[in-house]
Amino acid sequence: MAISGVSTRTLAQSLRTALVRSQNEMNNAQKEATTGRLADPGLKLGSLTSQTVTLNREMERLNNIIDTNALAGSRLSATQNSLKDLSTQAQTFLSTLIAGSSGDATPAVMLASAKSALSSMGSILNASFNGEQIFSGINTDVKPFKGFEAGSDAKTAFDTAFQSYFGFTQTDPGAANISKTDMEGFLASVEPDFLGAGWDANWSNATDATIQSRIALNETASTSVSANIDPVKKLAMAAALTADLYSGNVSEGAREAVNARARALVSEAVAGIANLQASVGVTENRITATSERLKMQADVMELHIQKLEGADPYEASTRVSTLMTQIETSYALTARIQQLSLAKYLS
Image (cartoon, rainbow, N blue to C red; front, side):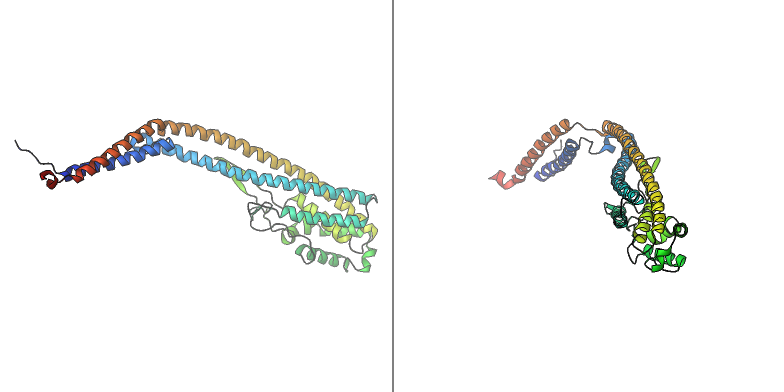
């Protein structure tokens, strides 16, 4: 009978191979004990792996939409706060205009209120959230409201329109002779500079298009507000007319025409802003309800994935302990075998 020899090198090599295998198994067991998921789903599930891949992909899509919905909801919340401030400013200005029409507010008070309204509009409409302009439509990197300061496009256009219509400037002594009827005619002629094409050219950098967000797999919603809406245009027109013409030399009758037109514009603006606040609120509620529904769907998918890929962390921890013991034993045996030699045997 033939007897095959066994060298210490062969024994050491076999222990080393077993040690590498045990280390790999321990790494997988540690991963399963930590995550509660199979370290290699494909090895365990076989043909069922495609189901987990599909479920994980769909769950990731839902979670991404939930995250973007949170951002959209925060942007709408900031928009809602700004609209509230804009409404408050408009109502304050309207109160001053009404007081002025009855003689309870002086022209100086009305002038100051109009300038305050314009300044507040600039601050509110040029507000940003997360580094994006919330009233710029899709042009979120540019401040939307240009203002009505001296030298601005809007002020220059208005001055040009006034001189073209009357033949002199607002500060010219001849402005004192403008009748109420003449001023009403001018206000009608200059209206397109505020409510028409002049708004985009001189007042606003915003786009009419607003941000459209996918709030569900098959549902989108407008999640921003543009400064190019009628309530903003009307409030700006009323404030600009009052701020400019109450500081010039126009007659009392002309100022009455300005006051009447401004009151009508601001009243419409207040109502329009209120309707817009309601619309934004509806969108906020839609996003909240949709996110809750998506979260429930994602939770159901998570349960299915856990059922397929789930691993018992306690059992995995036990395997880690067992494998650790085996590895330590292998290290000890390998060290002893490496110490064996013919010289030591013969001695």
